[in-house]
Image (cartoon, rainbow, N blue to C red):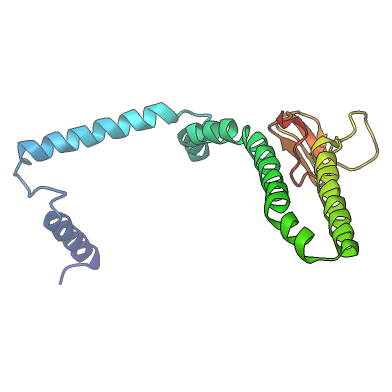
Length: 190
C-alpha cells in the first residue's frame, strides 16, 4: 500500500496533466505551449517590475491602477458646482416663466381681486425666499478648523494640509482646505 502523500501527489499530477498544465515525464511541451508559457512569464515579470519594490505593496499597485480614475473624478467634479448652480438658475427661471405666461392669465381671469393679490404676494414671497436662501447657501463660508494650537482634541491629521483635523472635518478638493462639518457647499465654484 502506498502512502497518502504519494496518492495525493499522483492525483494532483493527473489533474494537472488533464488540464495540460504540466507535460508528461520525458516529453517536452509543444512549441506553441512553450511560447505561451514564456510570454506569460515575461508579462508576469514585467508587471512585477513595474509596481514591486521593498517600499510598495498591493495597495500601492491598486492606487497606481486607479490613478487615471482619480484624475478624472477630480477634474470632472470641479465643474459640478458650476453645472448645478446653472441648473438651479435655469429651473427657477423656467418656473417663473411658466407661472407668468401660463398660470397668471388663468388666475387674473378666474379669481376675485383679493385672491389675485394674495397669489401674487405669496408667489413673489416664495420666489424671494428661494433666491435669498440659495444666495446665502452659495456664498456663506463653511468654516475652517483653527490654525493655532488649541486644547481641542484632534482625531487625525489631514493628509493634504498636514494640520490636525478635528472630528467631522473633511478636506475639500475644490478649495484645497479643510472644512468643519462639511456636508457639501458651493462657495468657490465660480
